[in-house]
Amino acid sequence: MNLAKLLFLMAMIAGAALMIAPQPSHAEMQLLHKVPRTPQAPNVELPDLDGKMIKLSDFKGKVVLVNFWATWCPPCRKEIPSMQRAWKILEKEDVMMLAIHIGGSMDKIWTFLTDYDVDFPVLFDAGGKSPKGWPLVGLPTSFVVDTQGRIALRAIGGREWDDPKLIQEILVLKKVPATVPPSP
Image (cartoon, rainbow, N blue to C red):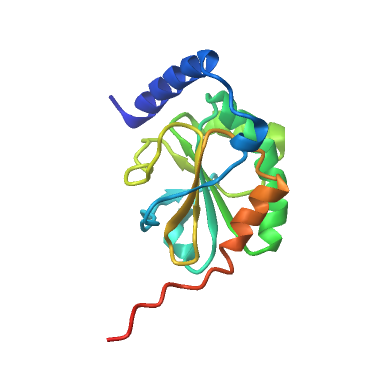
């Protein structure tokens, strides 16, 4: 089973579970969670929608919001407008945003994004191989990579990305000093 089908199945199961599980409050849904041990983010190299190859490693030294999503995923679709609004803020703060579409066709992505007037970078992963090495649970899952290229924060499920608290959590990572190794 390829990764795109597996993620789809996981999203369907998670959706069914959410229908019977108690729903978290809006405040709980807006949280970003620290990733234990802040592992190095796996490098991703994918084409953007114009065919230009983009590598995560190109943004070393910057904070990067990496969002894994798909057009068939309802929470993914719902969060895209808030991502666009957040992009307008983050771009001015020199924070990068990469939305990685898993599977699907380029035509569906273009149609969907045109309806929402999206201008942040969207990368296309037709084969669904880019999540390998990332602690991905389902779609959407987003990660905030710190200036050292480590996965610092994670959000499982959709968010209102232009929420001032989320923006602040992301911007704080710009000010975190690099880890200095102990002297011998």
